[in-house]
Length: 128
Image (cartoon, rainbow, N blue to C red):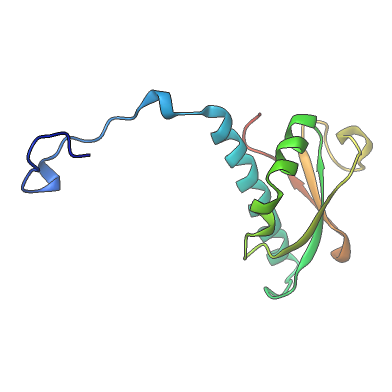
């Protein structure tokens, strides 16, 4: 941040920082958005079902694209460590969107809490 010039008297007088295009990775940003969408889906389903915050729940994730499933498998700890989601374990189902009753083929995935017998349509906001 200090580029050899003396600091200004106020941050309000400093130039707005410019983004370094070399540090922007759209693939990583997309993966983060997908993980966030899954975590939000788990939190919302917990709230809808009125699951106590301290109760750990297992979830089943159906990622209909192999790339998304592989990315989720690489980042399982992100979902498991999210305290409000409080996920006990994650398993993956092998079904495709067309084989799941009630789900449209346009969905990229679904999430299920087996102990609660409730399925949630999970739609990642971006593609990998």
